Image (tube, rainbow, N blue to C red):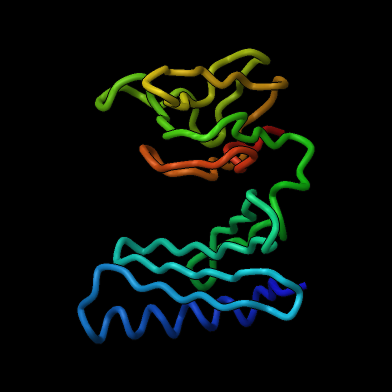
Length: 158
């Protein structure tokens, strides 16, 4: 498998150094692997990093948060988690009902099946995406107002 956490963390650290040395807001790196996967790394000055792994023929993406050094190492691929909620459509994600409102869910929050976890705006229609099971929100895998594709991982509930 092309995703190797240690090598990817080293790559993110190298890109972070370049970002800092040249006073950049963001830096990206992409490469193809021998297994028809595209690896993309994006490092932002806002201390976030993403590694995306996507098969060439697939429209879904595997996205991993790379922690700060010393941080908790994430699960290998969140799409294998039984409590994963995925995007049922293409659109723009909103984590709260209004820009200044509290988010629908927060990490550590207990929720019930059917509670709204995010909204996806598609074709000027706001679609409430419900929790598929009761539990505790463990990870929120998307950023507010970001674009998502069909099948993109959104939230993990345990």
